[in-house]
Amino acid sequence: VLACGSAEPQPSVLQVLGRGASLSLSGVTVQACSAYKDGGAVLSDNAIVSVQASRFESTRAAVAGGALYLRGGQTSIAASHFISCSARLGGAITAVPLTATVVGQGGAEFVTFVPELNISGTLFSRNSAEAGGGVHVTQARLS
Image (cartoon, rainbow, N blue to C red):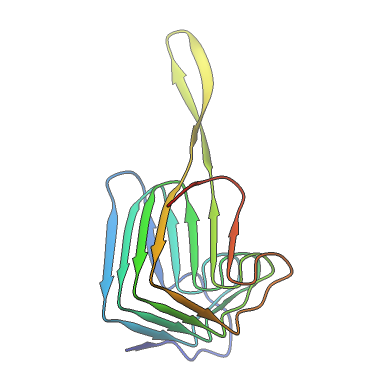
Protein backbone atom coordinates (compact mmCIF):
# COMPACT_ATOMS: atom_id res chain seq x y z
CA VAL A 1 0.00 0.00 0.00
CA LEU A 2 1.29 3.43 -0.97
CA ALA A 3 -0.58 5.94 1.21
CA CYS A 4 0.50 9.51 0.55
CA GLY A 5 -1.78 11.35 2.97
CA SER A 6 -0.12 14.78 2.55
CA ALA A 7 -2.43 17.73 3.13
CA GLU A 8 -0.52 19.75 0.52
CA PRO A 9 -0.44 18.73 -3.16
CA GLN A 10 2.99 17.52 -4.33
CA PRO A 11 4.50 16.55 -7.68
CA SER A 12 3.30 13.15 -8.90
CA VAL A 13 4.54 10.51 -6.49
CA LEU A 14 5.65 8.20 -9.34
CA GLN A 15 7.21 9.83 -12.42
CA VAL A 16 8.21 7.74 -15.42
CA LEU A 17 10.02 10.01 -17.84
CA GLY A 18 11.37 9.40 -21.33
CA ARG A 19 11.47 6.79 -24.02
CA GLY A 20 12.67 3.45 -22.71
CA ALA A 21 11.53 4.21 -19.15
CA SER A 22 8.97 1.82 -17.70
CA LEU A 23 6.82 1.25 -14.63
CA SER A 24 5.04 -1.94 -13.67
CA LEU A 25 2.49 -1.98 -10.84
CA SER A 26 0.95 -5.29 -9.80
CA GLY A 27 -1.27 -5.80 -6.76
CA VAL A 28 -0.57 -2.26 -5.53
CA THR A 29 -2.96 0.02 -3.65
CA VAL A 30 -2.36 3.76 -3.97
CA GLN A 31 -4.36 6.02 -1.65
CA ALA A 32 -4.78 9.74 -0.99
CA CYS A 33 -2.05 11.04 -3.29
CA SER A 34 -2.43 14.59 -4.57
CA ALA A 35 -0.51 16.41 -7.31
CA TYR A 36 -0.41 20.18 -7.76
CA LYS A 37 -0.69 19.78 -11.54
CA ASP A 38 -0.99 16.47 -13.45
CA GLY A 39 -1.02 12.82 -12.34
CA GLY A 40 -2.21 12.44 -8.76
CA ALA A 41 -0.24 9.19 -8.44
CA VAL A 42 1.59 8.59 -11.75
CA LEU A 43 2.92 10.95 -14.42
CA SER A 44 4.19 9.13 -17.51
CA ASP A 45 6.03 10.98 -20.26
CA ASN A 46 6.41 8.78 -23.38
CA ALA A 47 7.12 5.70 -21.24
CA ILE A 48 5.72 2.18 -20.88
CA VAL A 49 3.30 1.68 -17.98
CA SER A 50 1.67 -1.57 -16.90
CA VAL A 51 -0.98 -1.70 -14.16
CA GLN A 52 -2.30 -5.11 -13.08
CA ALA A 53 -4.77 -5.92 -10.29
CA SER A 54 -4.14 -2.58 -8.59
CA ARG A 55 -6.32 -0.01 -6.84
CA PHE A 56 -6.18 3.80 -6.95
CA GLU A 57 -8.39 5.42 -4.35
CA SER A 58 -8.97 9.09 -3.47
CA THR A 59 -6.08 10.31 -5.62
CA ARG A 60 -6.37 13.75 -7.17
CA ALA A 61 -4.64 16.22 -9.46
CA ALA A 62 -5.31 19.94 -9.75
CA VAL A 63 -5.36 19.82 -13.55
CA ALA A 64 -5.43 16.41 -15.28
CA GLY A 65 -5.32 12.70 -14.47
CA GLY A 66 -6.50 12.24 -10.90
CA ALA A 67 -4.61 8.92 -10.74
CA LEU A 68 -2.66 8.62 -14.03
CA TYR A 69 -1.47 11.27 -16.47
CA LEU A 70 -0.18 9.64 -19.68
CA ARG A 71 1.62 11.76 -22.27
CA GLY A 72 2.58 9.58 -25.24
CA GLY A 73 3.93 6.09 -24.56
CA GLN A 74 2.17 2.76 -24.09
CA THR A 75 -0.10 1.92 -21.17
CA SER A 76 -1.86 -1.32 -20.30
CA ILE A 77 -4.34 -1.47 -17.42
CA ALA A 78 -6.08 -4.71 -16.41
CA ALA A 79 -8.23 -5.94 -13.54
CA SER A 80 -7.79 -2.71 -11.58
CA HIS A 81 -10.00 -0.24 -9.69
CA PHE A 82 -10.12 3.56 -9.81
CA ILE A 83 -12.28 4.78 -6.95
CA SER A 84 -13.09 8.41 -5.94
CA CYS A 85 -10.29 9.97 -8.01
CA SER A 86 -10.62 13.56 -9.21
CA ALA A 87 -9.10 16.20 -11.48
CA ARG A 88 -10.33 19.01 -13.69
CA LEU A 89 -9.77 16.74 -16.74
CA GLY A 90 -9.91 12.96 -16.43
CA GLY A 91 -11.01 12.12 -12.91
CA ALA A 92 -9.02 8.87 -12.98
CA ILE A 93 -6.94 8.90 -16.20
CA THR A 94 -5.87 11.47 -18.78
CA ALA A 95 -4.12 10.42 -22.01
CA VAL A 96 -2.67 13.08 -24.33
CA PRO A 97 -0.17 13.09 -27.20
CA LEU A 98 3.40 14.23 -26.68
CA THR A 99 4.67 16.73 -29.25
CA ALA A 100 8.41 17.17 -29.53
CA THR A 101 10.68 19.23 -31.73
CA VAL A 102 13.31 17.21 -33.57
CA VAL A 103 16.23 19.16 -35.01
CA GLY A 104 18.19 17.63 -37.90
CA GLN A 105 20.29 18.68 -40.85
CA GLY A 106 17.22 19.82 -42.77
CA GLY A 107 15.91 21.98 -39.92
CA ALA A 108 13.37 21.34 -37.21
CA GLU A 109 10.17 19.34 -37.36
CA PHE A 110 7.43 18.52 -34.90
CA VAL A 111 6.87 14.86 -34.04
CA THR A 112 3.75 13.69 -32.21
CA PHE A 113 3.83 10.54 -30.10
CA VAL A 114 0.24 9.37 -29.76
CA PRO A 115 -0.37 7.34 -26.58
CA GLU A 116 -1.47 3.72 -26.84
CA LEU A 117 -3.99 2.87 -24.14
CA ASN A 118 -5.35 -0.62 -23.45
CA ILE A 119 -7.86 -0.97 -20.60
CA SER A 120 -9.58 -4.28 -19.76
CA GLY A 121 -11.58 -5.64 -16.84
CA THR A 122 -11.18 -2.39 -14.90
CA LEU A 123 -13.71 -0.68 -12.64
CA PHE A 124 -14.20 3.11 -12.53
CA SER A 125 -16.43 4.28 -9.68
CA ARG A 126 -17.25 7.67 -8.10
CA ASN A 127 -14.54 9.52 -10.06
CA SER A 128 -15.15 13.18 -10.87
CA ALA A 129 -13.97 15.80 -13.36
CA GLU A 130 -15.28 18.68 -15.46
CA ALA A 131 -14.52 16.52 -18.53
CA GLY A 132 -14.02 12.76 -18.54
CA GLY A 133 -15.09 11.60 -15.09
CA GLY A 134 -13.34 8.25 -15.56
CA VAL A 135 -11.04 8.75 -18.56
CA HIS A 136 -10.22 11.84 -20.62
CA VAL A 137 -8.50 11.25 -23.97
CA THR A 138 -7.57 13.99 -26.42
CA GLN A 139 -5.86 11.70 -28.93
CA ALA A 140 -4.84 8.06 -28.49
CA ARG A 141 -4.90 4.57 -29.93
CA LEU A 142 -7.40 2.72 -27.75
CA SER A 143 -8.05 -0.97 -27.32
